[in-house]
Length: 212
Ligand code: ADP
Ligand code: MG
Image 1 (spheres, rainbow, N blue to C red):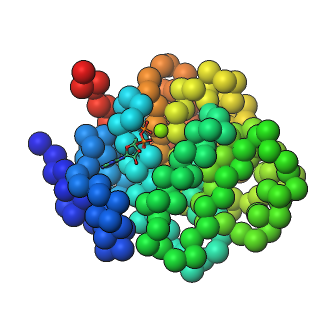
Image 2: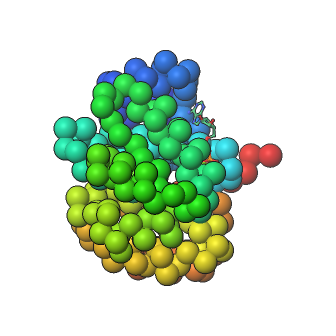
């Protein structure tokens, strides 16, 4: 049995206090199984159904190691659609409420470039976006990821289904090779296994079965 109290984790006190404020009383099964490894800096592949709390499983990991004083992009979360990216950004902002001056920026396709470029000039700690648009910013030079410490692929199976493989490859070629990579997926087809083999270092596998 794994511990389910957030206080059993090595989380910064401000994050723990905020979880209490949010009334997150205990970890969901996928959080309990993945957060200890995530917080140790390991690469993790986690498979679990919608609503199992995957966002906090990676969100707390990247927030716990974030240095808000260093104003450059430290984490990139890639999502298949704008709606999902908006949801993830909203959840991360909620989890980050206790961290002053933290900047979470979304970069999604279907949105005008100008304001995104303006926001990037102001700087961000965490970027949540869709692969196509993130890759475009990298190609244009409006986004640099030289200081990235955590890369998250959320709903990786859907990103591949949507044809984002080439954009993902291009992004991965432009992020530091020394980084933590976290991959979340509802399913684990061969294509995901092959991506994981290419971009992850000895990943810990976490699988949470559907409960009903
Ligand atoms: P998934 O990405 O696995 O579909 P989400 O990360 O979107 O799931 O989480 C689903 C909902 O559960 C969100 O509204 C989130 O705020 C809430 N939630 C996540 N973890 C906890 C927790 N430990 N306690 C209470 N609510 C939680
Ligand atoms: Mg999710």
